[in-house]
Image 1 (cartoon, rainbow, N blue to C red):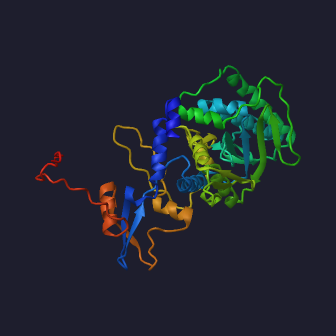
Image 2: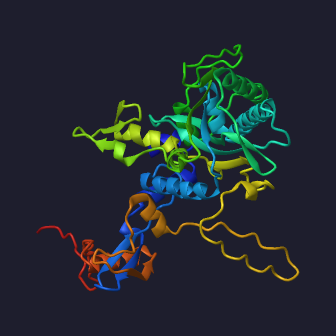
Image 3: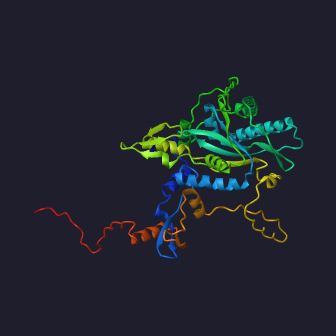
Length: 422
């Protein structure tokens, strides 16, 4: 694959870095943390993870649980509805080529939903300034490992007015189609001025293979939905709003958060067959049979763009909203007092506490790495980051075979001469 990519200029550096980090995820030869139990004195080696945003299954699962832990602290206690927007085939490659275009679609959809919520509040007699909120997850993949950029929005089932949450009824099929029509009217202005983008390297040429073009945007918008499913379709865009959770169903809301922040591939669905090919079971029950080359190609084009946030906040849930503090739930434990500001300087903004790696690992896999099977607690003794040192320790522990001996050159050995036979 690398040899074939040279025809189009090769893969960019970030793709090589993504693959290199994935291959080193969980490899003790790349470094580890040495922990020792304080009770039984047994030593344990804890490998490093790659922490990549691409298609590493374990790191993707940990990132989904980390997003869930943060969102469950900031999302208010209210009913939430998931709005899922899929793009037409003709726009998938332009969006992959210029990811900022997806931000345009995201803002247009959010504004259309907020406008519908405000009109609902006025129709029900609620006065004052009504504000909505949303959390958007960007996914670049489908359940079949295809390159399919789409949006998942978690929107509260109501608006805030004067610090009070006003619950609103669910959208009807006609209202859902009206939201999609307004989003299309705003987003179409941006896409009409676009030219035909061309791939600039082998990675973009690979992504172009994963994004098929089928739809002509000049067609008149036509809408159609599925009965009792709240699905609107127009000009190739598909808007689904049939999934919702009650305000008391915090476990269901946590599942939606993990679903939106999940990675592209689940290791439990992937298996290797006896003939050397790989079988991947999709969410709909269809099993894909792929060769190793086909699997690597699909995984490569699912790498998200660099410096592109996959989770964003809108409305009262955004970080710069003045009403954000009033809609957030009350923390269960008292917060630490803020540090005093530096004399003569601006007040320091408190940083969001992050889950440490061990707590995130226990939350994801249910295994506490600091808990020894004997019941004692493990303590960090050393952190090894040098590959040479790590391999030497592994050889001393018998976990890595010794390298073959190098041939020794004899400096004083006489030269070998080819003399003619007499």
